[in-house]
Length: 416
Ligand SMILES: Cc1cc2nc3c(=O)[nH]c(=O)nc-3n(C[C@H](O)[C@H](O)[C@H](O)COP(=O)(O)OP(=O)(O)OC[C@H]3O[C@@H](n4cnc5c(N)ncnc54)[C@H](O)[C@@H]3O)c2cc1C
Image 1 (cartoon, rainbow, N blue to C red):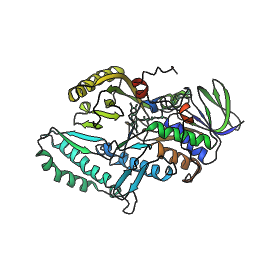
Image 2: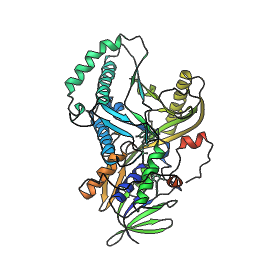
Image 3: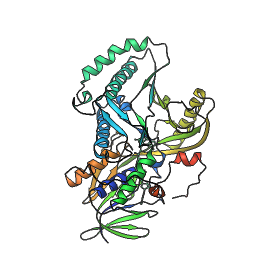
Image 4: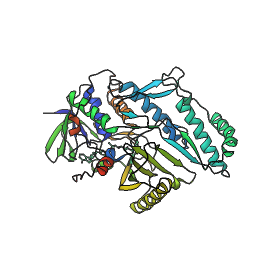
């Protein structure tokens, strides 16, 4: 049998692409080398949903921030048919509905280290605080089109300057702001997407590494360990393994993480932000006193190990009772062009006729990524109303647990 599409790699990128193609009635097979989906980077991330707050600190003309606002817009618009998609747009920010849903009101606090004599840092942090207020107040009903899309540089500078005096008069070491960023119950979300894709006739091929892709006269032959699958088109979503199939430049950096236990039930998720980037640390809380601690991405394993030691030491000072129960390194992957730095965005790159390389840059961007992929290939929007399924357990057979969950529960993973 010949499929229209092969999607290679079952992380967030492969899962969202498969779902959106199946939703539109295309025949699609998702091929994953592991025995479950979402077990690689998509199984070890923080589960932080970015609404742009972190990128109020980036000197890139709000470019990444606006992409993230667009990602939330696409989530609201194209995923609203899912019963457990519990983000509700209002004219003053996002509201999370109660109950077991894809997202949790585990709002992430930013703690800016106060360096009173450092004017550039004071300006950066006060601009960031001003922009976060705008994000929290953003009109998701779009009647005002969103102030953030039009805020000028001079307005940002003016607002930042007017706040500096207030900030420096604080006696605190850190200034604490609750942001509009929250967390995801990623396994619920992924299982609903997989269950819906299967319901809409997608096929799944697990424990089946793709070895190569061959060009035949009028189709592509996806050669896997279990045999050859003939398709019209291929999306390569294999993260750090993309160069195995095509000549695109991939940049990877290491993000080290430790899993900790023993947090108080009321501990909040936070990021400490500082002018000196390597001082930045974060904590993302999970149920039952578990947390993920980490911070920045670095180059090389040695630097990652050294940085993680620092992170653990800092957290143990702040919360003396915590116990480290596991450590791992995650790889952040991005396709780069002409030696650009990481820009934390998704990339959809047509590398050869009917073959695309796809990298999400962030889990949060997955929703926009799928919608935009569909637009680029078919030149129209995917549908918003379609048959969805709330996973009632069947898809958990296909979707892995998060790595932190397995570490805390002493689950031994089979090597892939
Ligand atoms: C430590 C860390 C923390 C992060 N935290 C966040 C966060 O909190 N919020 C956020 O929005 N983003 C976060 N990110 C980014 C986000 O996790 C990634 O952008 C995203 O998960 C990448 O998804 P992916 O589908 O491209 O890759 P992956 O999840 O790595 O999926 C690629 C899949 O391809 C499969 N594969 C590879 N080769 C083959 C082959 N030959 N044949 C078949 N299958 C193959 C792999 O087994 C894997 O399942 C984080 C990243 C890291 C590293």
